[in-house]
Length: 449
Picture 1 (cartoon, rainbow, N blue to C red):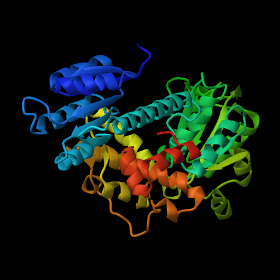
Picture 2 (cartoon, rainbow, N blue to C red):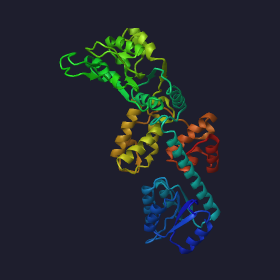
Picture 3 (cartoon, helix red, strand yellow):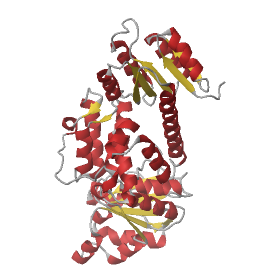
Picture 4 (tube, rainbow, N blue to C red):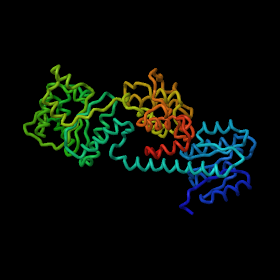
């Protein structure tokens, strides 16, 4: 009995209760006749799929009690697939239920074969979602925290996975806010040094007169105020990974000393006389054009060749097709949970703005916008006004599958799913295909919801 899928049927008519329970004997059916029983059953059994008659007591002729039940179900278990059942003349309430987050709706009189198909597909979608979660958990460690759905970032992720087990010195190039430190941490986490320290220093954030002592440490009495021997950040990273961020801002006077350390893997503290061996993996990053700095004479060419045994170019968010809305959705879930909000997604206008905006500040800017929007919003959907960004004039990719080439269909389907908050009916309508066709495309392209 426990192995069967659990189906919660919320219906107040005793005769219909028996008919539905008998008709769905392949499932472990749980019956509830009113809202309180339904919520108690939801808490106890955690069903993946629910059928909900909107006409519930104490006023079965009105949909208010049914809609309130729907709200409470989705608040307690947002991923539950709720199929609302309504009367023939109740289409407006059915549409309202879908707008609140219902998976689908069906109108009486009930055709059991049709309802069975809808329920089967709801369970199928639930299985896909759970499998996707399992895969995400399985793959969480390789690139922890990095969302890479576009082809460019997937290729970059494979590169990171290949170089992580090696000791190759790596240079990460990318605009501010593209996640350079996050990638550096991913390389560290995938390496055999993952149990050792990951130490990061931002060359642009430390005054020039303090940077040398910050990197290399100092002996007692090395300068005024040096009252005790102090290790530098490089020494603290011994056995692990040393990440030198914004190396393009490293003062020219320190570049020769850093070069010597990279060559010899030995440091000398300020005021010290002995060399100290340090075993570290070195990763550097900058948003600047290093070759341009070399031409200007502000960066040593030999140092560049030392830190760039492997160069990884991180694309800006505007060049990561489809990633902005996917990342925004992940951030929305994160900040909604942190702020105890029940925001379900983005309005159509907000989603379009996220996709078309250039994001000059990249992921950092996107994160700030989503965080603020979640805090300020009191609605179930984030609106364009909440985001405080504009929809650009540039056209977004088309949603109609007949208008895109085969290689773009996967991206179009994923974008449509995000726009429709994973509602299959809405997604199929947006893409201009039937639901069975959409399911076949899921299988064809290996898309997991």
